Image 1 (cartoon, rainbow, N blue to C red):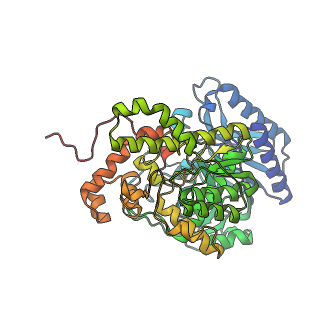
Image 2 (cartoon, rainbow, N blue to C red):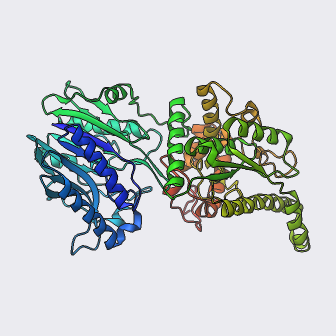
Image 3 (cartoon, rainbow, N blue to C red):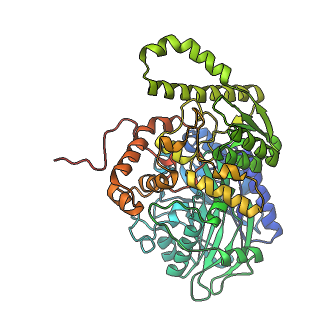
Length: 583
C-alpha cells in the first residue's frame, strides 16, 4: 500500500480555505498514485478551534465540507482527514477522523481527551467509545485509526503512568490492525520531536506493527506546530524511525508499506532525516535548554509563530520599541526573518537616561537587519506628565516610590506612543519582554508589556542571550553587535541602572525559575539542585506569585516550552506557600 502523509498549515475557522488545502493534497496524492492520504487532526476546522466548536452551525459547515470531499473523490484514493462532527442528539461535538473510501464515509471518534496544560478537550468534545469501529481494510492491509492523544497512553512507555484507563492503540491492534495511523495536532515545545519519535517507535516495537503519524504544521494564536510527521516500524527486528517530514514547513511524506517488510521506498530525504534525528530524551531539573540545535529549533518555531500570528489575522507589518537591549534586538531579528525587513518598523524612544551606547547599538542593528526605523524622544512628554501630577505625587510618595513611579511612567509613555503608531499605521505591536522578566513581574503594565504578541515571552533571558550568540556563530557575522551581547542588562529608566540592582543575576535566577515553573519542585530541592540559598528561592517564588496579575493582562506569547504562560492557570488571589504547614 502506498501511503501519503500531508502535513498542512490550516487556519482556525477558515473551512473553505482549509478545504482548498486538503484538495491540493488530494491532487498531489493522486499524482503520486497513493492508496491512502492522511491529513492532520481537525484539518477541516483548524486547531485549536476552542469555543467555536460550541457553535453547531460551525460544526455543521465542517460536516458539509467533508461531504463535498466524499462526492469529489474517485475510487482510487482513500482519505483520512480530521474534523469535528456533531451528533443529532448530542450536547457536544466529537473530534473525529473521517475515513473516506469509494464514496463512503466512516467516522472514528477520538477517545482520549486531554485537559491539561493548553488543552481543554474534555470541555469541548464528547468522548469516543471503545466499541466503535476504528479498523478498516485497504489494499489488503488492516489500518487502525487513532487521533493524537489516543497514541499517548502506553503505560509501558510512561514510567509514572498516564491519566487514562484506555489504550486505543492496544485496542486497534487487538482488532487486527497491521498499520496504526495517527492524525495529530501536537504542538511544539523544545524536545517534542524526539519525544514523539520515541513514542511511535515504542508502539511499533510493542505491537509489531507499522505506525504513521501525520502532524499539523504552522501557528495559531500561542501554539506553534512543527509538523515533523513520521513513520516507524520493526521490519529490521528492532524499532526504527523510517521517515521524517520537514519541521516547520508544509511537507508531503510518501512511502510504501508492507506488513512483513514495514515501510519501503520512503522518500530519500525523509529517510535521511529519520536516521539523523537525535532520539535522546534528556531533561535535567533546573536547567535552561541552551544547546545549539535546540536554539536553532526554537528560533524556527518563533519565526513560524510570528508569521502565522500576523498573516493569519490579515496583517502584513509590525512595529516594536528598539531600546538597544538584547531582547528588543532579538525580537527585531525574528520579525525580520518572519515577515521580511521591509515589514518591520523599529521605533527608538530615547529619554535623558538613554545612553549613547544604546543609540549606537540600535542604529547598528537597524542597518544590519534592513528594517525601517524612526526615533521619537519621550523626555518632554514624560516631563508634562510629571508636572501635571506633581501636586498629587508630592503628598504621598517617598523617594524610592517616586523613583519607581517615574520609571513606570516612562515605560507607559513609550507604550502609548507604540500603540498610537499602531493605530495610525496599521502595524501590529510586538512586545519584547522575555520569560524571566514576566515571571518575576519585572515589567510595566501598559508600558513595555503593550502589544498584540510577545514573541519571546516563553524564552528565559539566558536563552535570549544564547540564541543571539548562536545566530552570530551560525551566520559567521555580527548580526547582533558585540556590545549588545556584553553589556549588563538594563532598562535605562534611571542613571546607571542595571537589572541586577533589583534582581539576582539571570544566570542564577533562570535555573530557579525553571525549577518553580517547569519542574514544579519545592524550595529545598531547587536550592540543592542550583546551589543557591533557600531564602533566595523563596524570594523568587514570591515574586512569581505577586506577578500573576500582570501575566493575566499580558499579550499572548508563543509557546515553546513544556510549561508556558498559555497553559498556566494559577489564581491571582491565593495564599498557599510550599513551606506551609498545619502545625
